[in-house]
View 1 (cartoon, protein in one colour):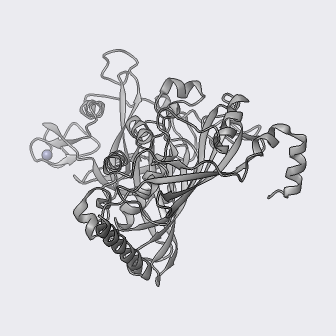
View 2 (tube, rainbow, N blue to C red):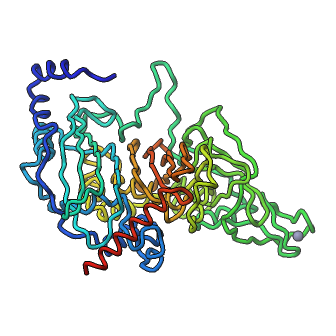
View 3 (cartoon, rainbow, N blue to C red):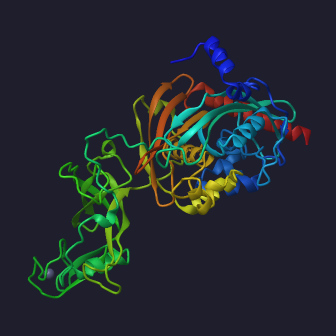
Length: 510
Ligand SMILES: [Zn+2]
């Protein structure tokens, strides 16, 4: 429901604090000139940490032949070039900075980025120097959110080269909130079970029943502890068996060894058990019968995917859950540490030859792509996007601010979303815009699985729209849309011609 402006003005008269926050709405800040030009080393570091192998960013020969006619910066780096850096130097004359100072002073000291909408007029090339002007768009009245009481602050930054050519803009929204005033860890992780409903089971995996370990399956559980999936193999005839047994079912031999599985397989069958719900699992529990490439099948949990992603025959890969600590030091039976095999979707191969709009349809789904979230990815991603907020690199401070661990910054989520889309559609996919909204946080140890679909498509121009999401075990971390241009229509050719013209002009000048 939108609010008439007259009532906003009336409420502001009653609320001098909000009036003070909204004083500078609409006013542009000073011109901020990036300290460094767009440059190859920063692009390379970014591509390394995002694990984006798109040659248009780092390979001069391949980039020269591409639609861009030369090396370009990844589009989601647009608002990295002008970042202040670790000293966080802030111009007092900036309306955005002033509002943040007022909120900090009033106790709204924590910061959470919630939205970022990037629009690219064209891609940036090494050597270009950007300048930006930020304009405060809005400051919300106080909101009670899951992570705390606070105000949403929204601003738009316009980017141009120092020569005055507009190259893009970013609409950015953050929540400035008072730490310790929320309900849960994360902006939309609010548990919603009403009065009278039974509490959900405790998902701590050490609450699961321990497996019965005996002489026949000891090798299997020892292997799991070493993160090795062992398949029983008959020493006499070579037959593979699962589950293990004391005697070969094929030749009758009692001489049994094992072979280490590759960990690759496909989904043979699946089920989603609902009742009874027991501790140790996060429901819904996805359970698969996985056919290993060695030929045997085993039952294991399917992770890093949602029920709607499950397809019979989908490629899967092994991942391990160290579920139970040892009950007794040194024990190797059921009282020892327990590790369980699980399976997740396989990261799809990067599309090296860009898809043509002529071969796509509205509704086409993009391949699932799991992204393991490590502390290195979170810290590296924050630093490569010049984001030095402590919650992205310092666990102690992140915990003091009410988070269970460090969490991924929005620029890394944007970069991973961009990588996902161009890996699915090809390196010469041109981004016109990408808009993301953050939900639950990505912490170290999570796996974020990207999924997406084509929602609109224009065969004449080659412009398509996609929606995408990145989901971890607790919910959607990122949801977004992007407007892209693919080969096969008029726009991709126009971009290629414009790149060539810009290139020729630069050559002529130098
Ligand atoms: Zn045998």
